[in-house]
Image (cartoon, rainbow, N blue to C red; front, side, top):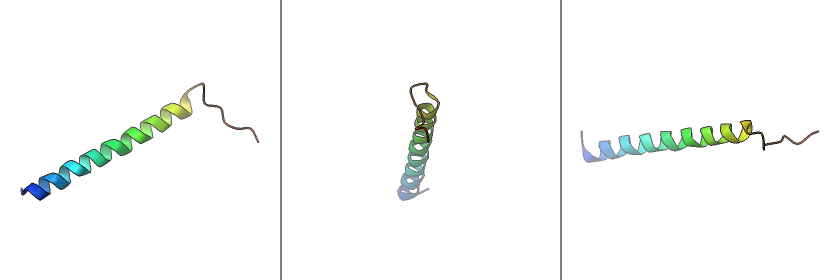
Length: 40
């Protein structure tokens, strides 16, 4: 494995983790009792 291959693998993992974190945060916000959907 070359250094560039290792770098791209690592960046891919970080990208997946950040995407997962965004989804989890959005889910937590949407399911929190403070979050109220606008009526209408």
